[in-house]
Length: 324
Image (cartoon, rainbow, N blue to C red; front, side, top):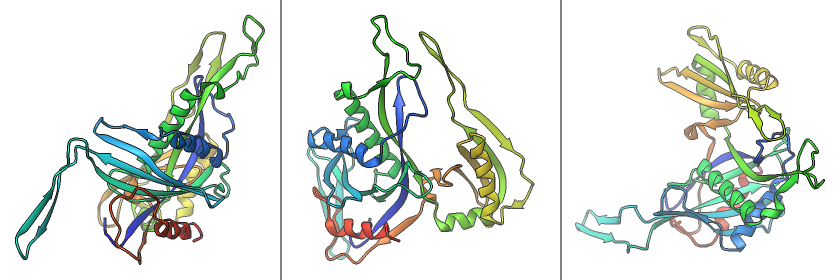
């Protein structure tokens, strides 16, 4: 991290509806309604979770919803197990150690901007920008937000029931219901540098993966089907050469209910790389280092690693990125 610049990662997030039945096909709400549930947890001082260990706390420190088309979240992470910070002056030889108390943790803040308008062609996917800080990747942040949504469904239990899809009733003639909750899934927007590496590289393996879960309902239970994996034959030492060629493969895979393509290739420099791509959006499912990144600079004052409130200058620079 630098005191005069920040790296911003570009993602898309998808709203999911999960349920006790594992149902698919339930229409998810728009993102601004999901954010309202997250904001309710924040307003009730419950937007904080220990995901990895008792020493690490991740929480929403501040929100900004003044712009009707976006929501800005300030997400902080504090870890009591991080080592003490040492500052050294190599001219004078002076060394200063800032020792934490048992209750203090080293803290970092990440500004997160979520756009309310869906991405064109995908009515349930939304752009998300994340400020890069140690310990808070876009995927970890989405995992945290999904946890808050699950907590909300448990605290406000009566709000999270829908009629059973088979229309059946119980012994008293009341319509059966099932419990549901909302979750988020994240995709990284591919950087142009990595896209070029992939196009110029030599394909070694392509696997298509279906995560589809087929359900058979009866009175008491439902049976789940396993996911399918298909390995495509690739010509030895064949360059992709054109993104349209891979795009065509992804499109066909998606039409046949394969949601993920796992691609392995060798770059011109001889480096072996692999990546998981969503066949619908052509975005990255796994591979944080290949995600599009933009650097924002020219701040009026030095940036600290953590802040209790949203830095409006940082927020405004991130909002400008949504227009580009």
